[in-house]
Length: 199
Image (cartoon, rainbow, N blue to C red; front, side, top):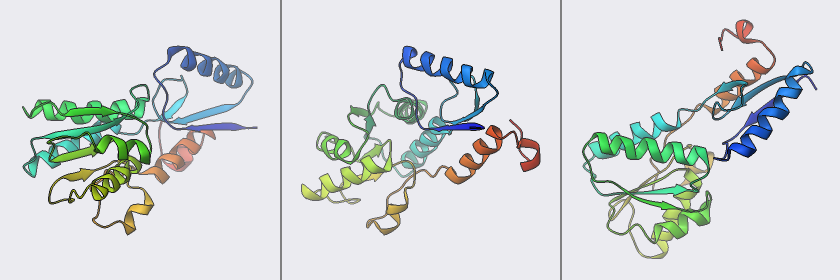
């Protein structure tokens, strides 16, 4: 095969990352091409999502609405996408001089969001590090009679398609996923100049 595309988060495990880097190195040495959408850890061409920056911008926007008591449904601590988003969000709150948010770790899925939402305490605004967790949180609040957004506001990250039908609408961060994939493919096929993109 001419090229390999990798898309997704890496885990915070130097051994796993090192083994993957070695395998990809052998493939590159044999003439293959590799590009990645995710963290820049594999010594290959990479399109790195703006996870920290997007979460920081979201935190600033939510704080501008008057929120001061936050909780973060942070996903698993070893998943770098989740960790980057949590760090960006909490870092921006610290820069604004706001209290440290309650950070709740759990699975990176709907049930993880559902379970964590039961532990958000007095937070008036909850940030789930992905939209699937946010949807779980919304279901948890609904089942417990907590009104959104009257009692608590909920925000997510990714802007998944199914949110178009969700009421109330979810505040979320959109990544240009199609463009990111196209850029990674152009890198893997060495089409950067033809596509009008550079590294």
